[in-house]
Length: 210
Image (tube, rainbow, N blue to C red; front, side):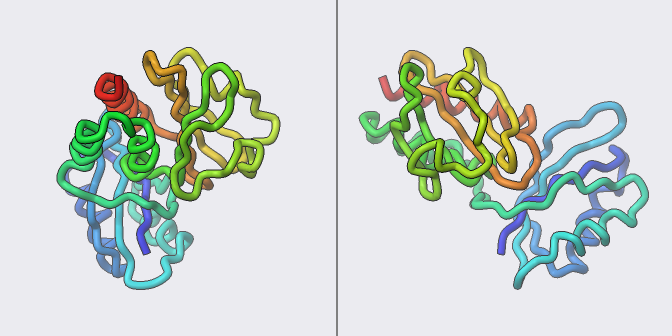
């Protein structure tokens, strides 16, 4: 089982090692550490970990929280496949077949930002154009999106928002009349670092897909 943990801790020597030691005692294999921020004397990192069996999120929180200054902000399942350059792999496939640029983007981008699914919707009609694996057949079928209007999901600028159990990211696709929407359930809000990464990827895919 793969999980992603978002952990905030004092930005001082040895703090990261303390987190890693506790995860090791729980049987976790740390596959990747993503630095989200370093400011005001604290750090926020995402840990992608593999577990030999079913992981108890409450146990993870309890064991890490006993370390002074450590805060576990979220624990959630992830589809992420850690690799040396997953962004480049996505862009390579887009460059090889530009006609499928946005379909390829939708299939691959959830794994880059630990989202569960992604869709593109028409900026004009709000209809789904592309869907990833696990994505709803329509946004009306996505549990927890009740009350969210089409305008909320097709903003003029990149946006992260919450809708019920979903944490959403919506990005305009330049010159394509589309918006890319990504969702994770029961996890934390998308961090600014994740939003910035997705923006760069979308901008390059939009250029390659012209």
